[in-house]
Length: 354
Image 1: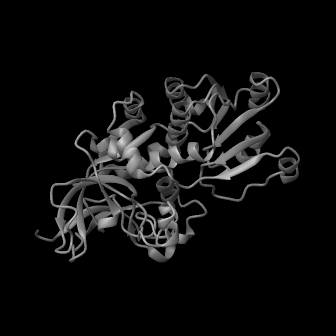
Image 2: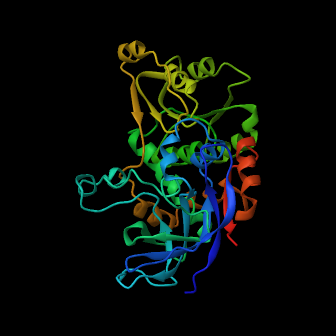
Image 3: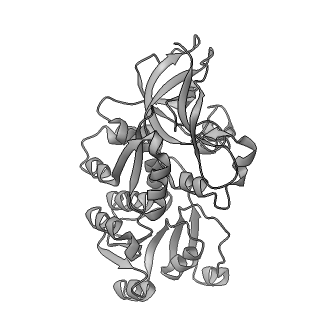
């Protein structure tokens, strides 16, 4: 194909903001696959990168790079060594690299592959552009039944489905989800799908639109933490026991301890969020009550399994569409990021990249 320039969202410097600019269309090479991006989602990590909050300094040596790691598209060109894909194939783009041969990959832990420290949109060029250069191991074919908009939701589905898997949730468990953002809402949906009993969504009055969707996703109770004592209310709902499982999805360091305070003895707190600072925890209380703190970052609920689930007749699949409240062009990215910061949306997608 004729090479030229394309529009992209670039993180150029370690400071707040982004740049919308022309960059060269990548050269494919013999082992490359050029993907025309059709839909890309804004992740919470992208918002942190936009605002330049702490804990993203790791990306400085790789600047400038194209942002975006939740995306899918159509194969535009393939290198001469590529056999598994051809132009026109609909594909999901994996955001982390895998080699398929290391100890992690061979033991079902591809998300910890030795190549996985480098992620699209955080260390290398990602999907907030007209085209993205991928390798064969980075692509999974997307069935015709899965829209590109749903395809752009697969990566956050991967995070949240594995958060629920890692919690070892048992049928009927009382669960609390802290934070009704896209990750919290998806976690609630998958917890209910796995058999959770009563579920609480904990947020603030600023989250009112998101809390309404939490009710649709199966929340039995909505608690506005800025209007009532959440801990007292949850203890009341559980007969003084506390929650079996708390999913901490806010990314606010102080909320980790608050989550532990509402977790029952021998219960589990699952840390799902990414935090801008260290959390201070009362570990003696954790020890004496035998509570569990579980970090989650991908897992055995593979991307392929999630694509199979999206391709099924499960009625919960339709609910995911309600998360997408805004779709727009890449050129309006600055406005889209500001909506995310103001919580005026739930999930924001780019669908026009020219």
